[in-house]
Image (tube, rainbow, N blue to C red; front, side, top):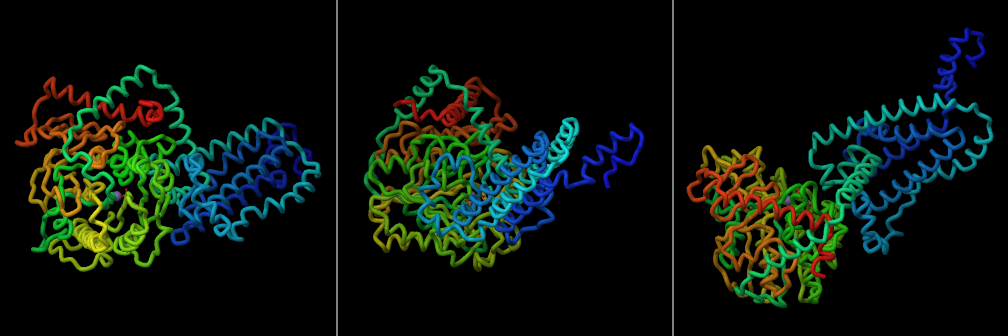
Length: 635
Ligand code: GP9
Ligand code: MN
């Protein structure tokens, strides 16, 4: 019934008109409802594809609808016919994105980001198998678009009453406010639950599972544009020169100890998940926790005051520093933000020296954006989850046992000299796959986070031992240098009391906390040459300069130090804390500690200057990365 013709008073007419417009005759908004229903259905279908185990339509629906509402709102800015076209085009765009995401997911188990498209690795990795990746059912996203062509033709011909501009503006405002408020609420709740995820984008898949595909792409675009705007300001030439001079001074002091002793040898670097220093040469219930690492440490150059320096990028920051000797991003992750930079990475420089370079990690390629960043860093190949037979799972994914075993075969196939960068996985927080880790008696620590970690790291230690023995039996260790280090801590601050109890520490200070943020680092040379312990305070920033000295590589763009040619114990952390090997400055309390006595000390002009220099160094690194300065400096 047309309620406008019931002969009511004039004042009621406006109201009636509105009710009419609002949709009692809902066909007036048919295109809007169809759009809302179809696009929601498509995004939910996509959500189910990428998350069959955890998919819950009830949970995903609200953020998905909230993310579509602003598009619907905008459609009301257009008149009838244009609105149909606008929504149709939006449907096409969203459908193409979902289609592309689905195809991408079937290979990378991840979602496409702008940085990934921009760095156009897609062609390199996927194009050869693109045909095989597209399945008939992926076209489901496009079916309605084709069906709508004749439907639209007919419907556009039907004469529909135009909504008044006032009405359209009203609906626009209402929907945009509703959409943004609700969507903002979901995103805010998520950012509370996972504070770093939106900035670091470490797990794009999870984000999409929880917030829906549109929200992911909006956040990704926001991050991308935000970074671009922040970095748009050009760096004045004077600053560029200053950074150039800083870098030159930094690297000229390198001495000659061990210079070039590894020239032309293969390099195998193993970054071990959550390997902390305290487990080394330590026992539980009379048994060594890491018997294999202990054995190899005795045959290697061992660094026992080596700190992890990771920030928001966690594992990926450890990779980034070790391969670039630049600090992690001030916020977020370098592996997400700096994929477009020209870097002077270890693999790139080794490649210039005729090395075959490859990264190995038996997990989702897109995690931590590795599939993009390894390309930027110049690795020839990345053997990710798709390159391994996932025949045994421990913890997050492929077991270290199977991963390292399969990696030996791949390494054997590399052209020598090679650089293999290997990242393990099984000993990952929360270490709850105790069954997978096997039997290791942790006594009183049974069923605790620490106890489970000890089981996990004991398991990984056994696999590392097996791996190194295999390499040795293959004769590969006769001409290879092996580096092993931990990526970051295993026991988070929340559970640190368990670690202090294990270590017999009472009333720990921040200095003591820092002393437990060490990770082991060893460099093994052929024939166990150069074995011994180096006590210099150092960190992950220092690996590349140290290797550059050993392998005789140029060291122009490094902010770390060559540990073998310095007695300077400087280690700077991303939050501004630092040590020089004698004192420790803790930034969050603005306190200096004397390392030997453990006491706090007051600030001197010299210390104040060191504090300032530490921040300056971080700023140099940020400027280099934010403004892509390696591309121009020193060239
Ligand atoms: C997975 C992995 C984990 O690929 O490297 O990263 P983390 O959670 O330890 O930073
Ligand atoms: Mn890690």
